[in-house]
Image 1 (cartoon, rainbow over the protein chains, first blue to last red):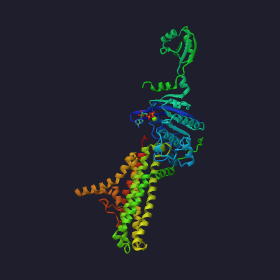
Image 2 (image 1 turned 90 degrees about the vertical axis):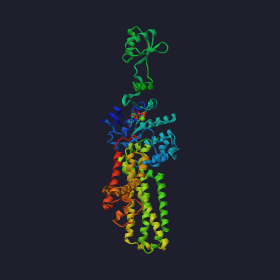
Image 3 (image 1 turned 180 degrees about the vertical axis):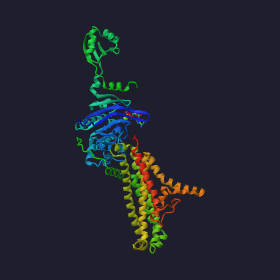
Image 4 (image 1 turned 135 degrees about the horizontal axis):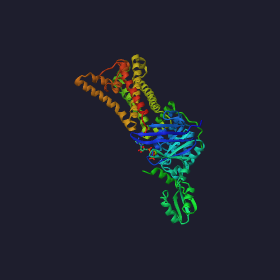
Length: 304
Length: 296
Ligand SMILES: Nc1ncnc2c1ncn2[C@@H]1O[C@H](COP(=O)(O)OP(=O)(O)OP(=O)(O)O)[C@@H](O)[C@H]1O
Ligand SMILES: [Mg+2]
């Protein structure tokens, strides 16, 4: 038997009244993976995470968290999940330490040593005794992360954890997530900015209007353009010829004597064959790596 | 770098109650209110030392003196603990929705019904603690009053059985009304899923329900319909107002300043009214918490 997925969605749907916000969403997150959950504002990321946490009920489909079906298995499995959903929810009248103690009490209590260890871990070591009402947005985000880590979760569910963090903070979190992941924690992290997760995620799911628009690793997202930068003799003529082809309409002139063109099949050799057939000989064919941000925007913004 | 050692805790009812007590311990309004009630009780006890009827009866007829003192002490008790239960219960429930902390708590496996029960239990435990404190203060106060007027504790020895019974009934009726108040606070906050609405409605509940008793009295005087009597007997506040009398069967001292139901239901029926409200509000709290999406 293969080990249970940390998270598994099967044709998950959520409707709010007549409005379908998550549609037929299916994917698996493997144990120990750092999985990015991407999509523009309103794509349905938070809604999906709320379903994972049993806060809202799926309208249709199946949802398994650490092998247990939700929401029925929530009581058994959710104590092993560390959630940070949207803005961190904290008790503003209490200090950071007391917040951790109070949340920890819910799970049978945590020793003060663990509380202080966590505060140090998220960079709040010297502010733990201040009231949270006096914390900045980024400090609250850090404390929210500490709350999620309190009971050493097997699955960490972070909704836009970089909200309000400065670049140094983002970097610290990134290295923290890597460490957690290498120790076996599964990290599920949502963001509307690809750059934020690009350097930590093994795989991503990209959501557009509640539907899965892409699932896979980032390198294939980057590579899957099918466009090549061709250095070629008689570049102007070649360009004219290419534009006349049914597949070459989008060809354009590149920098100094090159042409940027989409291969008829997506493969370099087929493009080369076609060019040779027409009497154009290429010096070089370089696949264009798409800018990730660009790919993300293309996936999520068309027909908007 | 501390790393997971996969030792996840399990969220149980006991842990949830402890968490609520940990929150309560840090909830200043509750303790300010509790202190204010202690102060008020002290003032009432002091005022009783100036009461000529108490002064003239405590030596020879301690029961008469007790009956003179008990209603006001009992009123401060019930109203004070009641108000604390109302505000504490509704605050404890409402604050999670207002702050959004409900999603962290529920999202980490504390069942929604369990959370409501834990909040009710924590509120009741606090009430029990406060009640114990008030009992100690009241015993001390009443002993001091006896000492003040007679120079000894002898009046206590001369207090007939019925006096002791009335004391026990006073405490019991406080406990019952505190339980009902906690259910009102928790129920209304859970139903509205809001701190402000929960607290405001809880505080307005008894004034409204006592006002209704007066309204039913007026309506009854107009057309003598039995309906108004029946409705007024089903109200929670007025029934609680005559609780010591209900518990005693008859003849217990009850503060006449508060509205009474138009119909004096027999003991079991009156207790049934209180139980029905308490269970009904608790059911409301459980149903509204368990059902529906948490979107805050
Ligand atoms: N309670 C609700 N009732 C109706 N529609 C809702 C509700 N909650 C969310 N939605 C809608 O669901 C869609 C997805 O919302 P969601 O919060 O999941 O988006 P998101 O991907 O988290 O966006 P963001 O990046 O802005 O956080 C939005 O169109 C939103 O308006
Ligand atoms: Mg969101």
